[in-house]
Length: 344
Ligand code: SF4
Image 1 (tube, helix red, strand yellow):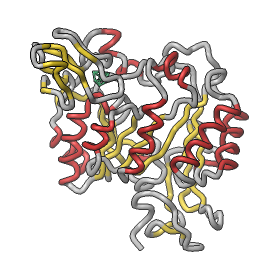
Image 2 (cartoon, rainbow, N blue to C red; image 1 turned 120 degrees about the vertical axis):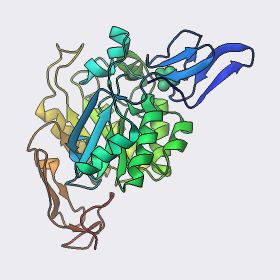
Image 3 (cartoon, rainbow, N blue to C red; image 1 turned 135 degrees about the vertical axis):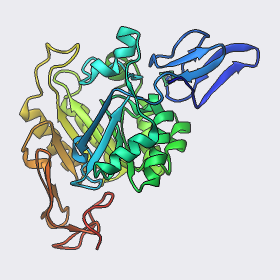
Image 4 (cartoon, rainbow, N blue to C red; image 1 turned 180 degrees about the vertical axis):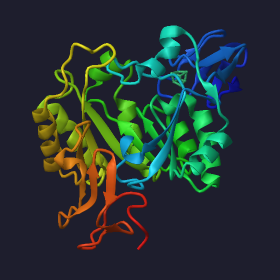
């Protein structure tokens, strides 16, 4: 559905070129052209979103699949996406839908209004709506309207994002989006330029901004052999998270599997993931998880004070074992997160 976009401006009153201010690319788009995400188009000096009200995916997922491990653990999240992305990562696991507008010059999807999504989520017994699989920034109008509808029905809202939005969009998310998992793909700008067609600095800035806005934040790093898995680079990421976001930000270090344009790269060796886990813990992070490795020792949440397993996980089976009102039932220590366990 064609809908006028949010956060755009004309370059000058007599100039039909527009600047999109939704993500850090801040594309300048001439009439008749689209931005880098290929789902926002300048028609006669007005910027439109091409994906409003059109989902390419709707699923009911465990919230742990996002991954969000400290956000209503054990609940389900109604997960939606439109096509499109502002990145072009060579290893994207959802490239068929994220890159579809860029590769095929078409915008696919089936109609669903924000209210229909919110009601479907409630009917399914979900505790939240997740804007995920592709990049929610590029369908922010649709995501935020849906978040508004979901909130009215008592549901929470979460983004799974590359963290490349503008501060203006973060302002609009504040009060509507309750949690976010941001990919911090690497600690080097060169990686972002070469592999994702983006830059590192806006992501680092946004991690701090999202936290300052009170949006619950978890961070994921996909460890890719030979690209971002050097010990010193992983140590830089862990140190950055600890120094800038504090010990309570959960860090998910995930295993890479060959995908899209990186089918020649092998899966991440287990020893690299173990090393990353150790690096995160040594940096002072209280919650470090190895991802994409079913039944890994680290997938349960332990109390940082007494080491009791407070949330037990086996794959996507989650059991809130020793947690009430955000505290460990064994020693009373606070466990950071949102709606951690039943109310006290
Ligand atoms: S959302 Fe799309 S059009 Fe807007 S700045 Fe980002 S890539 Fe460009």
